[in-house]
Length: 91
Image 1: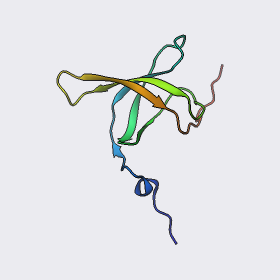
Image 2: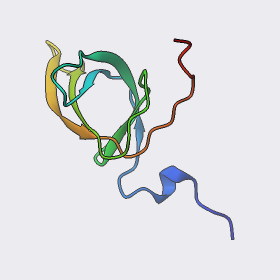
Image 3: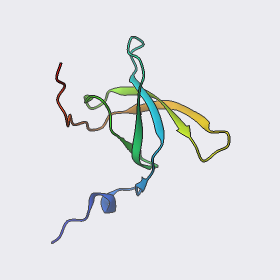
Image 4: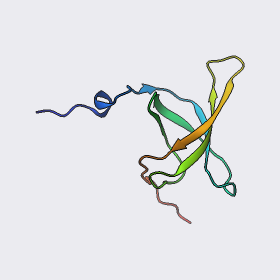
C-alpha cells in the first residue's frame, strides 16, 4: 500500500502562497522577526523562521494581505505545532 503525500492527507488542502509575516513569541521582551509563508490553508501555514520553537509556543503574528488595495494587515496568535532547526547558529 502506497502512502499518500502529506498534502493529500490534510483536512484542509495547502496552497502555495508567499505572504510577508512578522512574528514573535508572546513575550513582550522579544522583538519581531520577518519571514514569508511558503504555503497556507484554513488549518495553518508553513513559515521559515530564524529559530526553532517548542511545540505549543504561541506567537504573535502580523500578516500583510497584499491582494487587497491598499494591503491589509491581519493580526493574530499562532501556535507552533512542529519546528526544526535547519542551520545551527554560529554564535
